[in-house]
Length: 149
Length: 149
Image 1 (cartoon, rainbow over the protein chains, first blue to last red):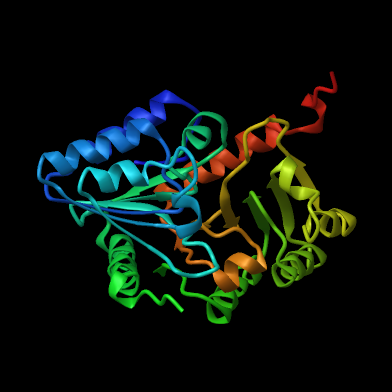
Image 2: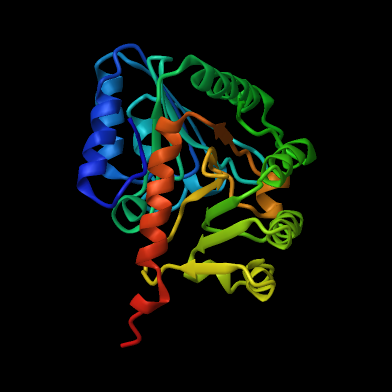
């Protein structure tokens, strides 16, 4: 279902349901991730044995309320950019098959107060370029490539 | 073509080409619009007789560099939210047929420096909910509904 997201809990439930359907893998590529409910769901998937990988933005991830520290603490792999520009994507891929993308950052502010859209698509022609972009970023942001000076 | 957007001019050209293909109507629903090239293209379409309607975010539209003032000055209809939350969508619809959506705000910063995605889809099942959302917002943000106290 492609669904511009109206405000509030109903949409959050739908998003949670989609995520919790993951059985094998979850790729997350998010500028901002601070929603406790979504953080909880992702940790749950990790504990269930789903392979979770997260890419996020370096500037945002250290801000107060960010879930990134908790996710790393739980043992989930997280990589981030090293650039002055933002890693501004907002998408996730469930089991390499379902793309969840749109304007929504995974923050309580966005879920409750903003006008946002979330598009859920399963057509391979749309999912593939996002999978490719994720793998490209994942390699590019490998800590092995970090420059310290 | 669904296409996670790599940096730079090539993607801007593609986006411009898609926009400039409009013959009848262009709906734009954007949190931030400050790119001079994209502003120029939209004014050009307006002069060609394409019906352009823009919805944007109240907090962002007055910032320095915003194109909104110039677009209004050219005679293009613009409406904005009246809420504390953000109007955070980033989509456009060409001739009620082609949906352009993703993480990209139409700013030079985003186009040149960020990691972004833009998805172009023509399937009616995906376009329709965005068209509906635009019409819903357009009515909701009608100045007739503004509250001043």
